[in-house]
Image (cartoon, rainbow, N blue to C red):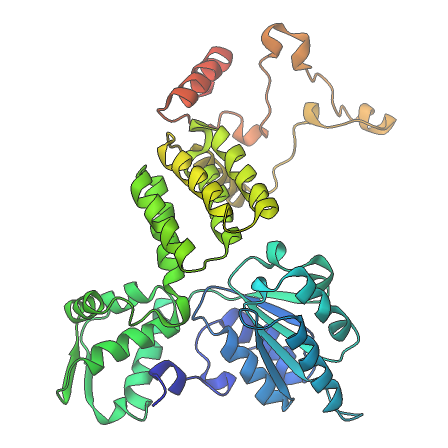
Length: 422
């Protein structure tokens, strides 16, 4: 018997849960589907949020031939064969077949190149699915021919709706007396992933042979501890392991970090995926406490492109240990988030006149650039003047944290600005 997640895969938008911003009333994808004119696009989002399901619903709704490839198992030859099959099976007036490529981010450049002609001339309408940022993983010529739609993790309400739907409508579960008494653990462990939620629910129910099944937080936790891989269908633990990896680096535990790295290497994880997370960690978690961390992480990413596998594992290991043993700071991360929140609250405040460029006579007459002081003309290459908009002139956004590098930077800011900074 198919697993619960497969049995409950919706066949129409009316039964599709979540992604209201894309498929809700008057949303862009729903309007596109209902009009019958679907252009090539890429669905970007975490696992278990409905990317494959949405592609199948579109093909069913439009009654088009539907071809599917997995980037994990397909090569250039497979792509060309599918394109030829699409050409051969298409009648003169028939709409484009749909080619769905799962995990398109794993396609090499040559594989993606082989799609360009067919997408451009309309032999197929491409729908790609990816868990990675397409800007980094999809070649520019292909990306320019596709819209990108972002799918979000399912909200609590969506997950509860799905769980209740499963209990009340699944051909197997509806014949049993199942009560969702507590849902906190079910929601927490599923992490916004519909497939994971259904796998966990099925695991908990199947482990109880009685007719009356009561789902509680303790039961969910107990079942998962007994069988931690049971809900890790199709490699979703990949996200749990990368989370443990990054948190071990953040927590300055090189032993745990290198262990989780080894788990990913042994599991065949994409080295670029790991390297990209190291670059993010270097900026987010180490930051100004050790700016060299970002340089090393970026060098790691570049070196992997040149060296490849298996030697690349050594480069990843060196960078992992360096980041884990570096002092930590998230002051830059906090500063940009605080600045974005400030922009959202205050809107587009005008740039002070003295900071504006004055390339024309009219601008000079309007006092653009007037009274600006050129810092290099003053001692220590510094002079007190206002750089923020008038409404924010005494605002402090970046705050130095307690590590040697930032303490020094903070003291220098105090020397220059006095109490206005820090």
